[in-house]
Amino acid sequence: MSIKQLIQKCKKQDIKAQEQLYKMFVHRLFPVCLKYSATYQQAEDNLQDAFLMIFKSMPQYKNKGSFEGWMKRIVINTALQKYRKQTVFEIIREDHFKEPEIEIDEDEVSVDYLLEIIQQLPDRYRQVFNLYVLDGFSHKEIAEIMNISTGTSKSNLARARVILKEKLESGIFKKTARSI
Image (cartoon, rainbow, N blue to C red):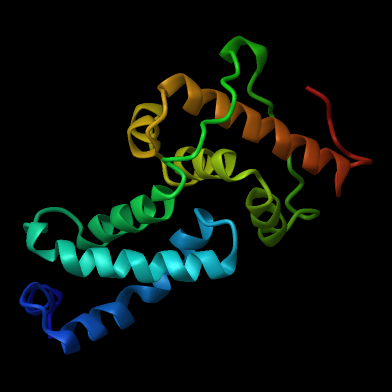
């Protein structure tokens, strides 16, 4: 069955088609949930909620653009939804932080280690960092998605980068860290 046929059956609330769609995309969308969730359990919950929203919103998909991209957007919004109501972190003036540059010796740092320290960032900083750096959203888009100002998005990103730089320098790079 083609993806177009599967989508049409899902729009008609065909449970078998929904199950097939879930199995087809769960392994691609779960890592997205992990990036925007504080814990593994929370990521599992967010993924289930996202798929419910995907199935509920299927009639809105007009077969234009990437279907996977459309689902990814729903997954990200679902994972971030609970943070929208939280108090926004203290706004940090943009001129207080310069973008830290980090030189990484790829032989000394694994991708797993980098992902681990990104996951340790405070929720809001981690989410802004992931949206901007890993998923390529603009600060304007992040502001709309997270219901914050563009300046807050920029300051949260700057603060996330400072924290990551400190973690890298204090950890594995203690001997080789270069100051900016």
